[in-house]
Structures are given as structure tokens and as C-alpha cells.
Image 1 (cartoon, rainbow, N blue to C red):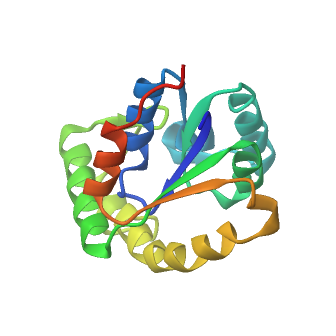
Image 2 (image 1 turned 60 degrees about the vertical axis):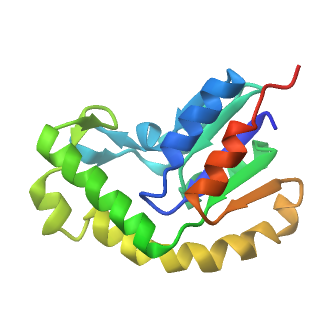
Length: 177
């Protein structure tokens, strides 16, 4: 386990777990959101995004978090392990709601200085809350199908359906000597 992709619905804890894995294994952590979003929530072109991801994952050891299908072939093609955080909708929605409220209130900067706002959170088609709600069931359907595809047969799949199982696994994770 040297090249790890952490996937799951927004709010499932991908970045938090990836950061913890990075620290435990002393490997680099790559957040796909930082490679995809420019300031003012401007998306980079697909070509630029794919190039950035290829460059960021050129090393031998890393953990990456994100679900971007545009670069899945790059990420999973180089990965040896995929960790799928497949938590109940109630857990995901609770987490994404509280995280987003905290970010809006504190004006926390994310993804290259961007900020979540009341407007984008509650009255926009681009709401992260709406996105999480819309993608939760889609992810539950598509990931098992993707894991069965021949091009991803090399991957070890670790499937967590509760945060306690992920925390237990993490507590037993140690670097390979």
C-alpha cells in the first residue's frame, strides 16, 4: 500500500482520512480539489487538470483524495489501493452540513483561497449540500461496478461503511519497513 486513492461522497471524510494516512505512512498527500479549482471557484480545463494530476502522482508513494471521474484513469491506473468511504446518507449529510456551516461562519479558505458562502451553500445549483445529496446513491451504484472492471483488477479495495471501522483500521496502520 504505497499509492492510495481515497474516494467517497462529499462530506464522508476523504481529505481527513487521506491526511491521517499521509502522516502515518510518511507519504505525500494530494487533494484533487486543489488541482481542479483556481481562485474564485474557477475550474481549470480538463487538459490542465489531467496534466496536474499526472505530475502530482508521478512519485512512488502518495495518498490522493477525490472522486473526479475525469482523472480516474490516471489516479486508479497508478494506485495500488482504493479506500472507499461508503457511509450512510445521514452521516454524510450531517458532516457536510456542519463542515460547510463552520466554513461559512469562520470564512475558512479552501482550495486555493476559495470560500464557501451562504449563497453558494443554500441557494445555488452548485451547493455542496445538494451535490452530496445527489451523488450519494450514484456513488453506491457505480463504485462496485468500477471495482469489477478489468482495468482496475490490480487494485486492493478497502470498503468502509462506518467511520469507526475506518478509525480502527487507521489505528492499526503502520509504515512498511
